[in-house]
Image 1 (cartoon, rainbow, N blue to C red):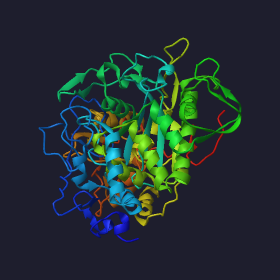
Image 2 (image 1 turned 180 degrees about the horizontal axis):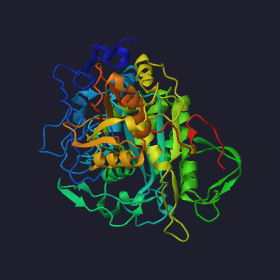
Image 3 (image 1 turned 180 degrees about the vertical axis):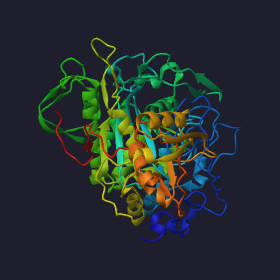
Image 4 (image 1 turned 135 degrees about the vertical axis):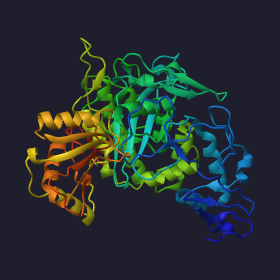
Length: 569
């Protein structure tokens, strides 16, 4: 295909106009020599003031810089004093388009005029919310990435009034999924958070339409999770902070959809296949849902009814509904992978449908950024995407439970695995000699607990961690020759144990007692004399004396994989 057939009147090949910007790592479409250059990405900064989120685990990225004085807009964005992004005008066609490989395909498929049309159209669809210092200002930073997907139950839009309270004009966090993407991008975990989970919502801030910041107090008593959005003016940033409080993870971005997104996206992909072991009929809910046993392909209003329905399910609870939602999402992912992504026309239809009902943070608030994100996530094999629900149990404070609380045993294990980026799937990886060598440090003879000499420092653990550990070691584990040395000279990323080669037996025994991973072992090169203690520095990964520092490798909770075709029960 020559350049002219791609839509260039001057004979220039559009593919030759794409230049990699080393400052951003993204490709730019240079329309001419005068095209604007993108601004340097904003630096990441500390958490927004007022957050009560726990200390971040190692490997998580820093926060988005807090709002500052208005600066010159980047090439993709227009200045906006308000909360919602202004719909882009025609003049934006003359600006440099920040697209990566996926967008390059638009140019090569249909010509630059076609690409301009779709860029303008998708840009006009997307709404953004300024969530201040919450989240990340980069699409995909190094390390694990956590994306919060919020299903808003606002009743606006044609036909949506039938789904409950018509006065609900802001909506709540009705359906919430935390999408955790591993650092090596080989696997991901999707965790559903029940709307009826009872938790404490933290203080947060919301940026108003006039640019001012409103401080919103957290809940004084335990309340439903779904009130983390929409109640008292809470925005998606408040929901992100709430999830951070629950999980100990740092959430990078949010994507919020409404009822209309389900209807339009399911239609755009040609319907979503669901499978039922027995007929499903909503006799009391008013949705009119009536599906036979076996396979059905649903779209539009029927798809929304399927996701909203709980009648006819096992316990007719929100947890039953979540199970059905996970199956629907898995089926849609398969549909996208197997049928839609290979067709540019279908892909654009889906993108148009999705973005019409999409609200995101400014870190991913453009078609180019969303394409960058989608292209990266699209590489994950469906068999390596795990779907589960946060482990919960019935609320013990309710005679007839209608809400749930976190399972005190299983939930921390799930969160610990996510914090340490442990895969829930059997992803085959090449064994690295360095890791094998590190694991060997835990192999060998052990000293007796009474022979251990160790100085304990707090290098980023909870307040009083060194003293608590000292008491636990001396009174419970027989390590009498231990000393509390207070705060470490400098904070560390993770708990570590430094020791001499002739103290290896002591180190292995202490690692057994503390539940230290092999990565915490830091042997020296010279032997120590008999009275020299080892040095144990507690890091942010240390939670409590007696609780293993090493993350769990597995947890017994119901799970499914995105590639599995299963029938609803």
